[in-house]
Image (cartoon, rainbow, N blue to C red):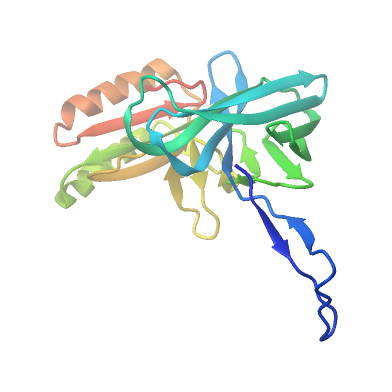
Length: 256
């Protein structure tokens, strides 16, 4: 899993061939790590979504791991890549979903190891509005985001999907109808996991988004009655048959 390179260090123009080379370890980046907040009506749990950078020969390959915690100290070791007996044909990264739990606002010591051999030490800062990881070393690891903003309790987001460019006005009308019972989401820019408010142009991108066809994403602040929103969505779906999908999620982890 891990690689090393041998580098001969020289001084001036003289190379002493009798001296042993200096071995400098260089750990290949093996794993991507993404911060993720699992939403539910009763709690929020921080997860580490880990994937191999290289593809594995099964779509359902997994990464085994150890996950231990003692008070404010978290110890995680990524161990082995497992090819399942019921291999789903195809190539994809192996995955692990590591649950760090529902965390109180505090600073935690975070150890991320590779086979309990290479240990990366760092800190996990949890506050009321975000999670933030700072690492002293990241040998073998690559964080896709080191900061995860927490989804505001009144956020709703989603997209309106359609198939023809001529239907864009209809899609915009559906988004406007949802916005009529909500407020503009004046949230800080950043990565929220489920969606990202991109810097500079305040452009919105969603984690779950159609890969085919056309779609209009949206993000609103909604503090009204959820049943009223559900009723509106039912009316919009019925009265807009050309719209292929109206997807809406909320901060309770519900798809409406």
